[in-house]
Each structure stands twice: as structure tokens, then as C-alpha cells.
Length: 404
Image (tube, rainbow, N blue to C red; front, top):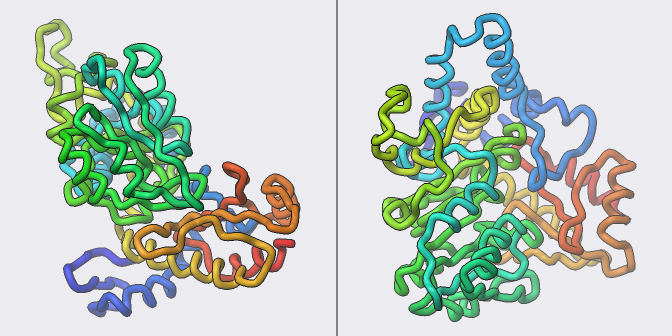
């Protein structure tokens, strides 16, 4: 495995060679067969639905099982070890975000993370919020409640030919905008937004940039500081290759100064084991948002998945998925399909959404492929294809050959 990233290359323990950026991708492709052995699903189906739920790799499954077996055999004897694994997972997640560990809290899911942000801001009459019409509902309902409860105006940018017009989106921001809420990658089109540009526009009006990163983190390099992200929310069951039931919340120092923890518990304070000291301050950073015990077994699984992603390298995964999706789109040229997803530089992602121009509905296409053991998803009136690090061009060929 690739074990140490350097500024201009990587040292490969397996080959004992220093790899330049060009040779890194080739080495990743060589590693691909080794990666595939960690995903037994490859023996059963062609799985191209990671934007919904990803099958966890074997090390992740074993880590979850090992923690449950530890509880079954030893009870709380190894509790401190479980805490250490949780903090290691937090550090790895912070590394993916380019954040500090204390800025990252574990929550149940994306909806919880976004709702606690919406509820924790002090809203005023005349405030508005800017978002996108086709956001996933997790990034809509939390804000619509503010409209209904406090009269906050919710402004929505429209989709334009599978894209978000950044000028239109920025044009909705004004001096009364408190939050700009957007997904890093759109679930129903695969469109990737220019977060840094949007962040600059938000800060010009002193608004917070709140980003749902669930469709990007782990496969697209993310830097919350450089991209001016104030809040990042997501779950771990997609590109982070962890079973469902675990999410996260990142808060910048700027956001932490404005957002109050509204759902709190015994773990939210500085010294949670000082049980009768009810006058304690909240924990620093985002840690106050951890109310109680997390899903310990899932955190062990996340720890294993994050090690795999970080050792493989997010930039290498991103390059591999760019190649696979470019290959898919090129091979569809001249066939009865319209590629909805933007393939422009800076806008494309590992998600490709299609429409059949000859009358096949997305659900009919999905069912046809499923019968042939090729798993994709119908989403937003489109067929969505979303490979991950272990998928290969031969599986894309199988998809192409099976599509009507």
C-alpha cells in the first residue's frame, strides 16, 4: 500500500520506489486488483451505486465484528481502547477535511448535522438563506423549517442544463443572507460546485458557507480552510465505505462563534466524568455537539475505512474515477443517451447521470440492469452511475454492453 504522501510524490513500501505524480496513477491501477480482493461484492455483481450506499471493505467489516465480539466477551474492560479508536478515526476524518480534530464531531447522520446548525443560529426578522432548488432533502428541510418558524426567506437557485450557474447563485446573496447552503457534489446531477468562489461571495456579505460533503469526501480532495467552508456535514455510508448510522459535523472557528449547541448531553461538557459538576463549560470546537456515546462498532469500521482511503490516496482515487467516468461518457457518444452531468473541468465528479432519449425511463433502465446484476440508481428523473476506487473499466464495459 502507499503509506507516506510527499509534496511531489509518494514512497511506495511495496515497490521501494519513489513515485512521481505521473507514475502514482499507474501504481494505483496495479494496486486495483489488490483492492478488489477487499470487496467481496465484486464476485457477485457489478456495483456502481456508491452515491447511495457503499459496500464496506473486509477490514471494515472485521473491525466492526471485532468490537462487538470484544463487548460480548469482555464487557467494558477495553472501554479506553474504544475511545482511542474513536479519536484516531476523528483525526483521520479531520485529515480528509484538512481540519483540526477538535473541529469535527460525530453525529448520527447528515440531517442531524444540518438541523443542529439551523437550530443553533440566532435568526432575525428579514434574514434570508440561499440554496439550490434540487438539493437533497437533508439540505432543504432544515432550512424550510426556519421559513415556517421564523419567517426566514429561503432563496433557491435553479438548475440550468444539469449545472448550477454560479453567477445566478452568487447573485442571490446580499447583506441579509445568513447562510449559503450547498452540496459539494449534487446527488442528482454529479455537478461539483466551485466552493472557494462561493465562499468568497458568502464572506463578502458575512454569511456562513454550509456544505453537504456527503457526495465528495473520500473521493474528491477537500480543504475546508482553502475552500472557505464554515460548516461541513455528511454521513459515512457512501464514499467513506462505512455501514449506515454514523455521520459527522465540522465547524470552523468562525462558525463555532455563531452557532450554539442546541442538542446537548453528558458528553458535551469539558469533563464528562465529573458527573455532579453541572456548571461546566461546553467542550471546545465542535465536540460540544457529541451528546453521548456514539455507535462504537461503526467508529471501529470507520477507522479501518479511513485508513484504506488515506493510504490509497484521495488524489489517486479521484484520478482513477475521473478516468472511469470519462471512459463511460466517451463510450456513450453516439448512442441514445444524454449525459446530464457536466464534464467541464472543475465541475465533473465521480457521479454520472443519464437520460435515455429513446423512451426508457430511469426506473425501467435500473430494473433492466438489476436483472443482469449491474446495480445503479434512478435519481431525480435520471439514471445515476457512481463507481468507487475498486471498480475497473471492464465493469464499465459490462454496463455499456447491457444498456439498451
